[in-house]
Image (cartoon, rainbow, N blue to C red; front, side, top):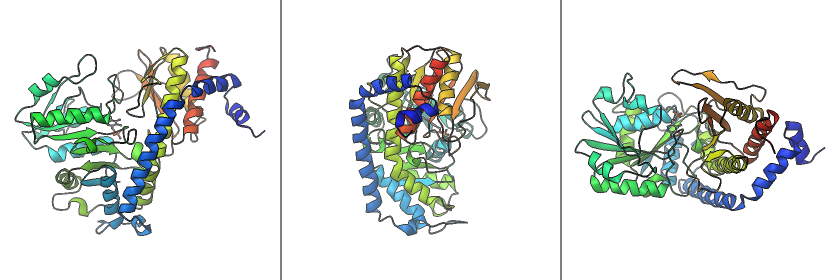
Length: 427
Ligand SMILES: *Cc1c(COP(=O)(O)O)cnc(C)c1O
């Protein structure tokens, strides 16, 4: 048998679930067309940046040791800067993850006596220790950098009066998180971020604005650096690595800020001149090249998941008709059993570790048990299809990624199948 439905049947998806998925898909044509248009623009943007910088085979050469005169590394950073409409970029395997990149950008551009302001409520979990909201050795707080935050208005909007009042003579850097991450607030469009930055700079012209860009890259045609951000920061095992980068992080922005980040990453006096590429440059260039379509696959998956689960009567954030700001989809499943079934479905659709059964477990640093499903080529890469969530009301799973749309589709169909098999839903 060679037709698509029968291979889906063999993978475990019943005809009933396939039909349901097909019906949902038919209602998503407009969203998918928009996703394609964004991907096409971003693909052209990446190619233009690579052509402008005359990318060629010598740029993929290995460097070791100090990594002096690493032209491939330096050129990749020019390509990134051009993609982001920025003056400079730091793109390195030595930046281990998003949190590291953010800590680097903050630590390099804040001095003792300075104040950091978050005008969008609390930051991503891991930044609490970076900032010192939760005590940690080497936090910004330990180094004499204070922190202030302005919470969002009840409707999720920016509290402009509160922000104006919070900006003072010590305020040096303003951090804005683009994606809601695992919080319940909305994610922001680049346009909204631009307005917020303009407002902050009106209050204090020399303040630096940094955007945590994690999960947002290439979801729109513009990036925060196109609307006034002084730095954008993110991880290469999320959107921009295109699934190929095995590690790494990036910071793009104003040259003066990026130079400081480089001195902080290596050492004062050394800066960006050192840092071996360890043979990873092909995966960085090629990953960036693939990133626009990889991100579009992930966004399609998120919209399809929203469409399916909406129709099954669950609350989904964002809704299937809403414009996407990032690749994350939340589905409120309402029970522990449903979360387990959902994650089993995602896991059983994976190319790696498909035979593993995810179970809730107590994780250090979390109050409730957590369940996770991931079968990834790169450990922890959340641009690959994955789902996770804390086992507590409203029993929401956060679903993200998918290097290909068809894999994301299979994962969602399998999740529905598992809920059906467990008697949690009817169709
Ligand atoms: C993932 C993420 C981070 C942290 O990145 P890690 O690579 O997990 O350290 C920070 N901010 C946001 C919004 C994220 O989604």
